[in-house]
Image 1 (tube, one colour):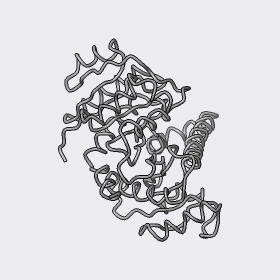
Image 2 (cartoon, rainbow, N blue to C red; image 1 turned 30 degrees about the vertical axis):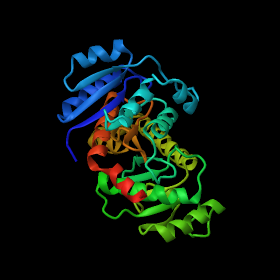
Image 3 (cartoon, rainbow, N blue to C red; image 1 turned 180 degrees about the vertical axis):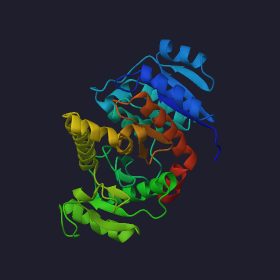
Image 4 (cartoon, rainbow, N blue to C red; image 1 turned 90 degrees about the vertical axis):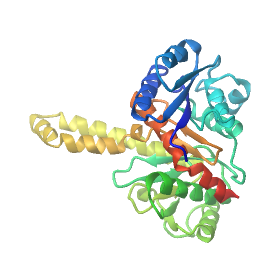
Length: 328
């Protein structure tokens, strides 16, 4: 696959857009000399930036999809929004991937409705790299499909396994099903049926993963419905924030603890970096015709940079092509 990649980017995506998006795109262009960007957003935002940066083209849009809008309705109604236009550029072949830190629901809807599903994929799924201190763990689905059929989880497992192998380098990823117990008869009827299908059809299926196993490193890929996955992800992120806040409070509470904090400052920074979702940049929507990467709404410029670079890496790795071959 060619090294040169074009990614369309939503200039209005994120709580702190457009400035953090512009800063992140600038950093991504500086880091990757084979990357080109089509920046989608208001003319007064994207045109001055594009004129000042090589390998960046402006695509002026006149509409914006807000966080509170109904995702599918907004995508159908606002055809000149930065999200819809960015996805349409992928569908029409002007870009090979799309990145946004805007409305997750709108990105998922546009990815599915505008870019389109790969033939044979029942439901595209959102996968994320969990902030595990042990080793990379992929959780899929984390929000694209709140209601699932057991057979969907088989495809989630297969697509996420390809992602783990091509992007992270895990040759034979161990797949687990998020459940309330290790035994295969545990859980709801949905979980039990999913377990049997995964056991039958996914060669690298390693059994049920309980909540305490998610970050433990026993599994490389963990699959579940999007409702459960989103709750799990947000719980992990929230817990990490609370623990670091409390740890900082304890370490600043006395001279003794301040001295101790100074001695382990480097180690703490390393741990914080491994747990920081900004390092991943975004989560791919697996199963669509092209790269569609969704970032956090609170993304910093660093997260935007990493999200754009992750989009290019996804394209270069051939993940989408291998998923298409799988679905034939």
